[in-house]
Image (cartoon, rainbow, N blue to C red; front, side, top):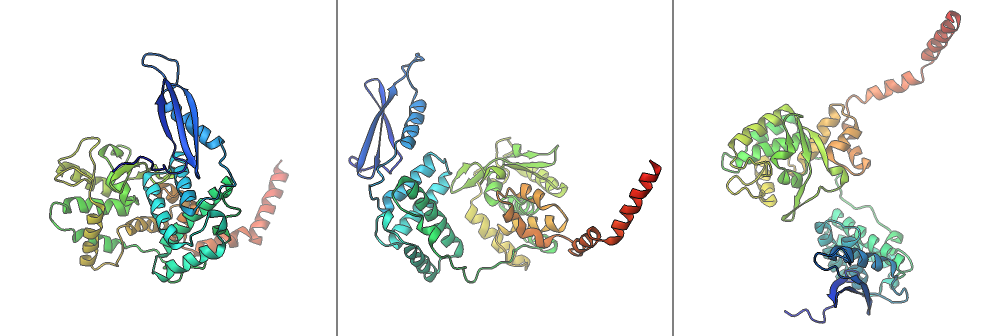
Length: 392
């Protein structure tokens, strides 16, 4: 299929050589902008610009050359520009860009057909109501609002909208949300491990479930874990990669790149798994498919986990809730929430605070308060001061 005449996404830009120089072009609204970037570097020469240097200069020009604020863009046009900005300048993960593209498609269908400057808060509120009526989950609705909030903030900065209508819109509290954390206790974990099938994948499932519950790694982090990430001597598992939507990438956030303590039981289980595995090279996956060495299919992993949980007669939880099992157990053991934040790779401390209710012996907090404001302590401090002054 020919792509001649097809307009590129707003802000994505294109770079091309012509007669020994680099040129760039990009669209803003219906206006095409062309710029000469600089001389093209010849092979063996230090003069001129490499393609990477020309690309960087093009991005700089695209940031500095303000688009015409009088131009009225549709939601699709403004959304394409925002996604290009997120991808090229903010360098968000491909999975995030893919999510945003899907949300933009849905929003374009669900919101009224207007230019970006014509939207009102009522339009956003109506869109939320439509999604709720269609049975969309609170998480999905929240994702849509986060994207649209960023889109309209971007549009305001570019002069394509007067205000961020998403920030102005009312956001009713989602009905039917479950505030409880789902996890399993130690007896249920043991029952789960006992119900792992004895087939080929079962030899992977047992150490996988134990590692997930006792280290708090996310599913994508477990799938991407390599043997060189397991530090036997230091007793640590180092999280350096993630695997999602069929591709490897960096962890979810900067905090997600971390080192997690490896309990002795996990270390012993992983050593047995290492001895059984046919893929034990430094760059081989720890929890790979035992026959191919390829990444364990996430969907199949979840289905097998669901079957094992049901067979164990444990509380119904998702695979992700093994991560909550780690968080609640660590909080119950008295680990400081700041430490738990580091181990779990939470970007925001507020996320970790959900485990605060599982900290041990709440009565101790009251005793600390009583001690801190006790008159007896004040009298003892005063006596001690007098003794010190007399001795001096």
